[in-house]
Length: 275
Length: 256
Image 1 (cartoon, helix red, strand yellow):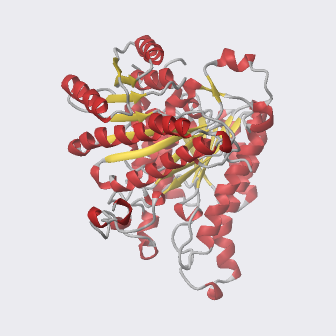
Image 2 (tube, rainbow over the protein chains, first blue to last red):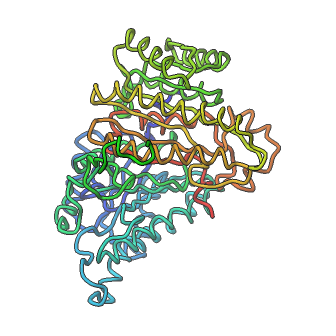
């Protein structure tokens, strides 16, 4: 384990990923497997889990699909108990499960209690349940990597975007609380902040999301672009990263969702500072 | 090189990287990491000892660096440096602006001479290298620019007005230049380092209480731990990442 590329290698590592059957989670699961990890894929629906599992097994990887609703703490506890029993340890937890589409898009006075709770539970409480369930196991082993998944809306606001922005902002703060609390035991926590990728979920909610022309690089993310960064954060190559945010968003957070190719309104010769 | 799929995710074979230096202790580690990932490395600095150390570090990875002694605050010297690189390699894929400085003094005691020297060695040099090499990258429609900064990109510090102001400049340069060249195939990002030491021996010998008091991981970083993030940001696989600052600090910035 001396060379740089060895440090990225996940052989002998066990990774649990929630929401691993679809969207970015599916790509993360495939990338973790290709980097050598045993992958436990959790998700609500059986069919997408089976599809990802079939690909991984076909490629020669090892995986275990486990149907799980992360908003139910007893199911989360069962998922992590099962993972430890089957693979003897869990090195990496990727808290990816969440709701993208259907989280609102209406004025605050029309949002019901259950609509609010559904998104907060799926996006924030589920990550808390998973981190809670695995924390002592990782502390006992003196190592572990928790990777949470937030969004640009976790850092910025958006019109009629209440539950999604609040839950994703909560995920960032959950990451910082974990990082500053579990770091002393050798357990690191970091947070991915994906921008807009072309996935099933984002296509459904397109009416609420900026179009590709408003992403600075001029295109939406391609789902498999999330793979390498997850492998890096899951690997020994990121051992000194803790409590950090990783925006993979085509430059969106560097500015705002504004039209690209901004030109100055005045010619340079008219610029007051230069006269 | 390993045949594991991870090597293809982060492989820099065939890439040309320029690493600038201003006497930073990190220069050898940065140069070695890029070389180990497969890149041909150019070391550009006005400090001979820094060039020598970085050269040795690259050679230890099996690479043959091109060392150029250059005053990076002088525009014609920067142009000459680029010409030398282009005559040998024909392109520049990666620029690591490793031009940070540690300068701490009560604000009222900072002389104008000191301010000018610090600005020349950091801000002016970063500007010139980014503009000159960036122009080449625009022609290529490809490039990766990585600024090496510190936690002072996001935090203030008493007696660090000059240093943190310059890091603030680098931070905003990262964001604005990242946006300006977003559709040109060039990605501009920054690594904000925390408290790091050269190797595990020095970390063990450290008798300060800095890690236990301030760093959530309870340890200093090793210089070599910059490699993973640096190589990721240098690779083709970071094409959807630009204008961002990434903290590498054991959790320092996450803490209140």
